[in-house]
Image (cartoon, rainbow, N blue to C red):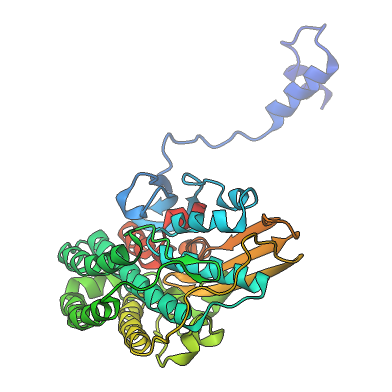
Length: 402
């Protein structure tokens, strides 16, 4: 053994410190590492986004691939972060109201409804019945507009361009009603804390009823184009499957959850505004795949029309604004209020310290929470299926990043 050690150190200088000699001997004794290849053929790491059109915004998805098969994903977000929650802490309750329109900018009306009702709970006030009915009508029109935009862009991701033209044609009629009502088409700032600032314009009810009659057969046209289309079915059926148990574990809500067979809708489970006065069904799926999520959203569009028609025919007379203090100083406390936005549960957690500005505001955005299920849904799928699954989750990065 001594001879072996002597042979190993024979070429070292006699003045070399003992610690260096020990290190050298350790390296000589360690087994040789396998030679690494320049590119590992077994796993390829690919960046999808943040400028990829099918990520529906500045979302970066890191894909780990084995050929065309997805081994895993990682979502990198934050490219659109503007610090909305921190802004809320430096604005009065009224001043912050328009900011929420910029989160899910495809469903600005729903954002405003959730925030206004949360502050109203904190102030212990209630919007008048007339305002509640107007809120429901505009929120359901917004749900239709959101689903139409989703369907057109989702179909385009998968390769069908005609549905985009159809849905944008019909969505334009909703935007015209919004524009007549409050002057805005996209970031529709329709509501105020305590009710609605604007009374319905002359002919509002007639325009809404006319739209409902116009769009109902158009939704059937969407189904004619896609529901039994062989390519559409092959690209969506059995793709992005998530079970009811997994969806609940991930906190998934909205159409994505209902497509997995869970009958959960806040408009029924925890009624707000005037939803308790209307009859409508909760569409659910069975397989939890991309095809079922498409079917659920199509069915939801029909249910929204049912709600709108009931509400328009029963709008009560009276004021559109409740008694709200000019300077809002909610009592010390906290409140969490959530609504059923087009993409799922949209919640607002507000902490009041008794001043004119909220001490803390926390938004629970459905797009952000639903996106965390992406990895579970695409593992084992193909790269092309990742595009379909991102589309079927229906995310808006303004809401994910905030």
